[in-house]
Image (cartoon, rainbow, N blue to C red; front, top):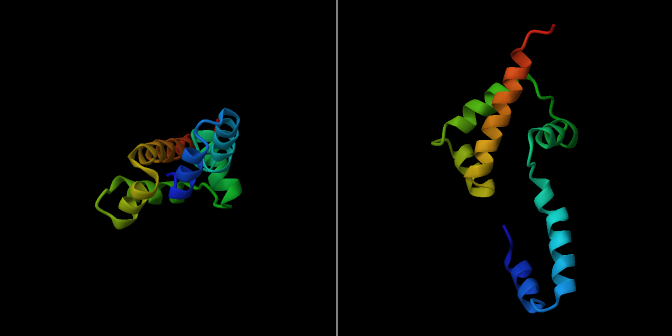
Length: 105
């Protein structure tokens, strides 16, 4: 979500093409990349950046929470990150569970 300061700066220099390109580049690199866009990015975020082992128990617990839209934690997540990202997280948690349950060959 873009704050009022970012909107002000963007509007203040809206006719400056170079500023807008630089602003958009740094805004995207600094803030938007913090939200994973793929399963692989999400896994790195959970395991490496956050230091949380992506265990079967963790994935099952988080998925059960995020499947219940009546829980305050799930509602807070949607408010912060949006319903689209919630769908991604559910899909990625389900994938992690499936991968953990696969028998090793």
